[in-house]
Image (cartoon, rainbow, N blue to C red; front, top):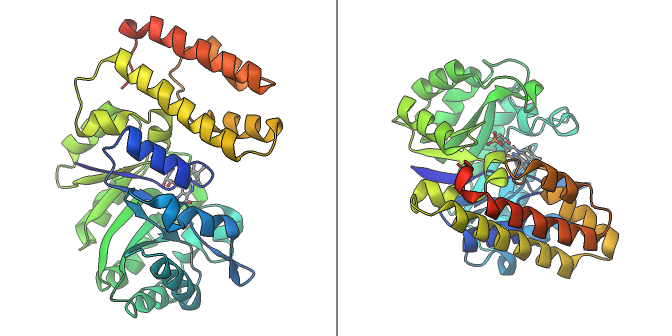
Length: 319
Ligand SMILES: Cc1cc2nc3c(=O)[nH]c(=O)nc-3n(C[C@H](O)[C@H](O)[C@H](O)COP(=O)(O)O)c2cc1C
């Protein structure tokens, strides 16, 4: 089973991807949060996130959010000039300001726009393209109008998150539609959505043995060590996982410290880390981290959390 780390805007930054890769391993590919064109130009933070010197040694696929063939060309050329040989096309973003302007999942009701984009990929035989998509924007059947176009395009794979854009990240994933999609899609398929624990992955692989790759997003932010456990070191102890998670946190925090301007920015960025991180950590101690009002308080609260977690390590379920 091959594991892919989903792109998560605001979370899976170049720094995060590099630290995760060096400390945990087990991820075949990390996808960058989408790179887009705004007012005709690239965004500075996107350029910095895909810069080769920030991604050395990490298996990274940059992701683009094009609206039409012209944007796809600009973005492909940007990726090529940064040395990338793979590019992922976002046809799944559900965020209304994106989708209502015909990007992300907003492309899915427009067969002619998808055809235009797929045709544009063929101008770049030196680039391998993949698509990350949902079932549709409004309707869970919109994909069926697109499948012939997608099948006719040379893609390395399609990652499917079986929800509609309108659903955002809520509601059930539609496994029946996923199965129909698998039957009609000629490309390799990567499944994405609500795989959060080892048990979730085991259930999925038992039910869908033909699907050899999955993509995890929020589940890996919550339990960053899962990639190690899933793809190799099954026998690692709870105590070791907690110690390594502590080191991982401190490395992230130190890197934030080195790049933040002032205490309030550092605290804000450190708190953002915890939006998805370690929901299974001791409750009282986690609350103290999230509610800390100074970096000193934050640092002492995180030390307490890891100490208390470690003290209880034989009685907890981490997977
Ligand atoms: C905060 C946040 C940011 C995201 N940013 C992106 C993005 O830049 N590109 C993308 O294709 N998907 C993005 N996604 C969707 C995830 O990649 C993934 O498809 C989704 O979270 C479902 O997978 P999961 O249940 O494993 O988290 C984002 C999701 C969240 C919650």
